[in-house]
Image (spheres, one colour):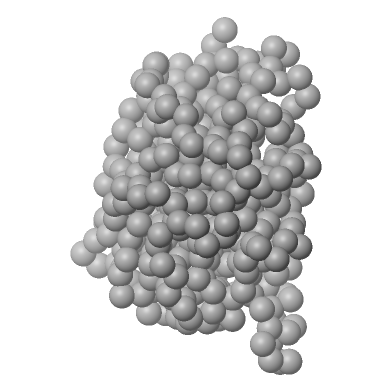
Length: 377
C-alpha cells in the first residue's frame, strides 16, 4: 500500500456468540465443469461495509483447520529490482505499492490467469462438519478490474478438476480514491467433504495487477470445522464481515468482537485465526488483543507477528509456516491469514472473550475471525 492510503471508516461492531445459531444454507458449489474464464458470476448483493456476524458455531469432538494462500506477488521488471523482489518473497520488508505486482500461477493451465495452492490438514478419520471459502483482493492498481467476477472463483480439490464456486452471501466491496477492495465467500462443505485433506487450488481470483501507490493484494482462505471422536470436546465458531480498520485523528482506530457463552474451564486451550487485507510489513500501529471476562487483556502476537505489526502480510500458525503452499511467499504483500495461541487468555477460564483490533496508520481491512476453545465435558 502506498503513502497515499486512505483513512478507512470506523469499525464499530459488537456481536454475541449464542449457544445455538441458524447456519446459512449451503452456497452454490457446482459439480459441473467450470464455466469459461470470461463468464460472469450472477448478480450478488454488495455492500461497502458488512458488520461481523457469526457464520457457524458448534460444540463437538474436533476442531478447526484452514488452508490459505495469497494470489499475487511482486515481479522484477528491471535488473536492479530482481534482488529486492526475491528478498521480499523470502520475508524481507516491503509493501505492495513498492513493486510491479503480477499474478501467481501454479496450475500450468492457459485458461486461468492466477492460481495458487495450499495444504488442508484434515485429520485422518475426521468428518467435515462445515467448510467455507473466503477470497478477496484489490481491483484498482496499475489497471482497473471490473467487479463482475468478485463473486466467482475456480476451486480444485486434491487431484481433482476445477469447479466453479459462487458467493452465497453479501460481498463486502468498498471503493475510494485509492483502492477498490472486496471480500466474498461461499459454503463449500460438500466439496471439502468429498475432497478431504491435501493440496487445494484456487484460481481466477479477481485482482488487478500492476504498479501504483494503491498496491495489488489478494488471496484466499478455506476454513474447515471437523469432528473426530478421539479429540477433545471443543467449541468452534466462525465469524465474518468486511470492516475497515483505521488509525488517525478524529476516527476510531479499531473495534471489538465479543464471544459469549464459552464456559471455558481454567487452563483451557484455544486458538484464534484472523484473515485481513492490505496490512503492510513494517507499517506499525496495528494490534490484536483479547480480554477474558476476568478483565485480563492479552496481546496476541508471536515471533512472526509483532504486537504492533500483527497484520504484516504473513500466513502462519503460532508463528510457524506449518503447511505447504505453492508458491510459499513469506511476505505476502498485503494478505494475512494467521492463527494465534489463545491459551494464555484462558488460563483463568472464560465465559466470554472480547477481541480488540486497531488499525495501522495507513489502514487495512478485517474479513474473518475463527475461534477454537476447549469446552467443558
